[in-house]
Structures are given as C-alpha cells and as structure tokens.
Length: 99
Image (cartoon, rainbow, N blue to C red):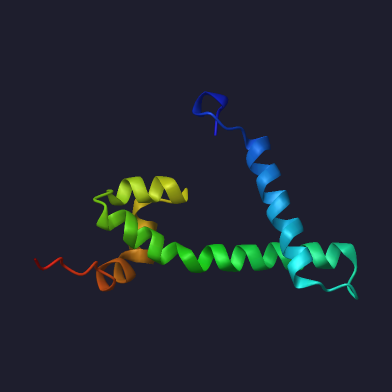
C-alpha cells in the first residue's frame, strides 16, 4: 500500500512480525532453534490465512463484489480467481432472510 492510503508496507510488516512473535510464544517449542520456531510460526500463519480465503471470497461475492475486484484483492487474474473459488462461492450462499 502507499502512504496515501494511510498505512505503509513497513507498518504491515510490523504487524506481521508481532503476530509471528505471538504464535512462537503460543506454540512454545523451546527445543527447536530460533529459525525453526519462526519457520513454524510463518507456516502456521500462512496455513490459517489460506484456509480462510474461500469463505472470504464467498463473503465478497455475497456483498456484490465483482470477480475482477476479488481477483485484484487476491493479486491474481480474474480467470484464476473464478476457477479457484467459484464452486465454494456458489455452494456457500448466504441463507435468505424470511420475514
């Protein structure tokens, strides 16, 4: 992101660093080296973030975001976003509100 958008890449990196330090503390794997503990924390964060993507894409589509907008947010092409997430987005439709 640019400074004009209110937050810098360095600030985001700081937040990620704090999250990783917290994961290291939660996992408490004191028998491993520092590098291995940090690697485990990054893998844990990536795994949990990736597992949330399908529902977040479905939420974005439920909120009438276009596939182009979803693809841009994911830094991927529109065809790839559709191919990857369309089935989940269709199958996870929000239930209708019945008055």
